[in-house]
Amino acid sequence: MNVSSIALQFLDDVDTVDSCIYVHHTKIEEKLPIHSHNKHQLSYVEGGIAFLNTPTNSYFLPARHFVWVPAGLRHNVELRSSIVMVRNLYFPADLFPKDHKLRKMGIYPVTDLIMEMILYTEKWRGGFTEKEAEKYEFLIALRNVLMAVSRKPLPVALPTTKNINLQGILKYIHQHLDGELKLDSVAREFGMSSRSLSRLFRDEMDISFLQYVKLTRVILGMEMLLETEMSVSEIAYACGYSNVAALSNVFEQMVHMRPLDFRKRNLKRES
Image 1 (cartoon, rainbow, N blue to C red):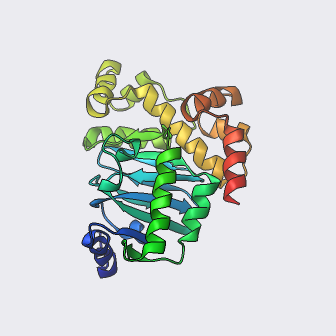
Image 2 (cartoon, rainbow, N blue to C red):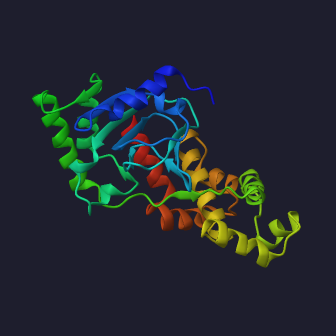
């Protein structure tokens, strides 16, 4: 991957001053390979579909949610559609108690207050310390709000694998989500027994074949709900479900709301 000198300089700048809170509103993260920071990172994607990739998982970032990347976690941002902006804030690790939830990776809803505070910083750029008292205190106030309201992360993450054989199977699943994906038929497609394929999923990714298919279909449904004008019924069929109720039940189980509610809530707030 060809990484520009500007992108590499950005990586250095974030961590140059340990005590500063760094603000950077840009799309530069998409140009970076997998990397890490010494600071905790908040990223909010405006308009469009994005994923946060780590060595073990791929996290879908829906509208009106921010991703929290703890210090030291290797990651990169993958944009699946044209976006307006990625808003990034980087906080020194010691500003958060060691037992707080924001010491771990998570995707959280953006409240109206958090949104307004992030947008207030849209013209800021660079690192801010106690010397820039007004801006620093504002960012500390944002830190306090984040700690108070970030309670339950969105449980939608697809595990990844370095196993070449399994990578081919995962690609096949993604390409056939609109059809019938059963363990025995997929196993036959790759010359395996059902037991061997089931064990491969468990051993390599600590997830069952069925759970992986469910997660992949739900994530596809989330993308379609936000990026298309297709009806929920059309989306259900495109995701391999025979009826709306089947998609709706799985969606509510994993996202904790019905598909139509998810669309209304996110599109309304994003607009």
